[in-house]
Image (cartoon, rainbow, N blue to C red):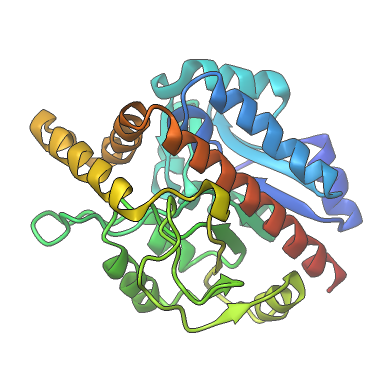
Length: 298
C-alpha cells in the first residue's frame, strides 16, 4: 500500500506540527451538492485558521490520498453517490481494482494512522443498527477503531442507530471514550441520549494525556452538537421512524441504509438536518484542532 501524501501534510509530518485528518464520505454521501463541496473547503479552512494542517482522505484511482487538492474535492463532490464509499475492509479491493471513492470513519482512521496522523474529526460514528437482532448489521467502524490508535472526535453516533447497543459494542471492543465537557453520550442531532459516559474532560491537554497511553485502540472524544443547532429529540425520532419505514418498503439494506435515511430526513426537514450536521462537524473540527495542538506539545 502506497500513500499519496500531499506536500503540505508531508511538511507538517516532517516538522511535527499539528495535523487533522478529515473524512471524505461527507463529500460523496453525507450532503448534497453544493453543500458538500462548500463544507469540505470550510472544514479545511477552519483547521488552517487554528494553525493545523488539514488532511482530507480519499481513494483516487486505487491510490490512498492523504490531503486533497481543491480540484479533487470538487470532482468528488460533483460525482457524489456515483462514487464508492470505502470502509477499512474495502481498501484492498479499492487498491487492487484502481477504484475511486470516499473513505468512511473506519477507512479514514486506518489510513490516517498509517500516515502518522494522530487526530481525526468526523460527524458521527457508525454503530449497531436497530435491526441487528433479526439481521446482523454492525458498522465496521467499531472493529476498525478497536485496532487503530488515534484520537477521533465526533458527536456520538447517528441517532438512526441503536445507541445503547452501540455504546455497549464500544465497551465490548475495548474502545475508551471521553465526553467533551459532558457526561452524556450525544446523539448527533440532539445531545441528551439518556446514556451516561463514565469520563468527562474539559480541554485538549487532558485528552492528550490519555491519548499518549493508547496502545491498540482509538480514543473516542464525544463533542455535543452546539446548543443553537440542536434539533428537538421527538422531532428527530419522528423523522427517523418515517425514514426507516420508507427504507424497509424499498428494500434498502447494507451500506445504502445510512445515506438513504439521512437524505430522506434532509428532504422531510427542509434542510434542517443538514444545517445541524454542518454545525456539529464544524464544532468537532475546532475541538480536534485543540487536541492536535495539545498532542503536538507532547
